[in-house]
Image 1 (tube, rainbow, N blue to C red):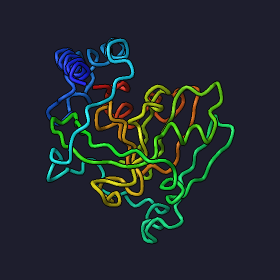
Image 2 (tube, rainbow, N blue to C red):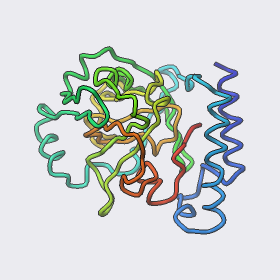
Image 3 (cartoon, helix red, strand yellow):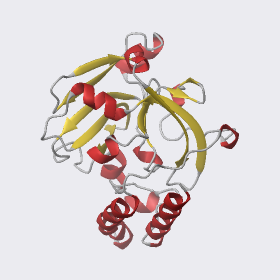
Length: 254
């Protein structure tokens, strides 16, 4: 684990030196110019170097004593008036269902209770935000890989897209992972945080936890999971809300 952590720190330091993942307010990414071009050009090198060095290593896990007394809720604190989500929230998500479709053999509609009935993984991990803050929390939920196995991915599937209830302005929030990260053992659909039901501000009823990725990849208010062959033609075509809107890197590995 110590060697794995050292490699993670080395890669993070390299990324920061190439233009930075820890940005003051993240605003520089929204403006065209040399800085944004540098980040975009560095993404491929970062992706391939991390996959080569880290392989299937786990993100560091912590003890209960390490947990942060306050875990900041970042981004949207609710689903921004999404009517379907508000209706489910008013009924404590009793009849909410997660849709799993796209390039799958068996499209699924999974209730919250069905997700809780699956084998669960609990993990205490650190959430790293591009704004420069971190927090350690405990998450529990089924592994995404097990959900995808139940649906049966078709051979043409290459990406897993998370469609969310929230939006910013007219742009719906979404994120995506490749199949390697989707099947990583620490990639889970968390319905529990710090021993209690996932709070509204943190993405209830479920959120993605992809522990080898920066915080903006951890989609909240997930309503639908879609298997796709390509990200082309999906909203801005770059694989996520922040990637489309602000030029964030699609590969956010740490």
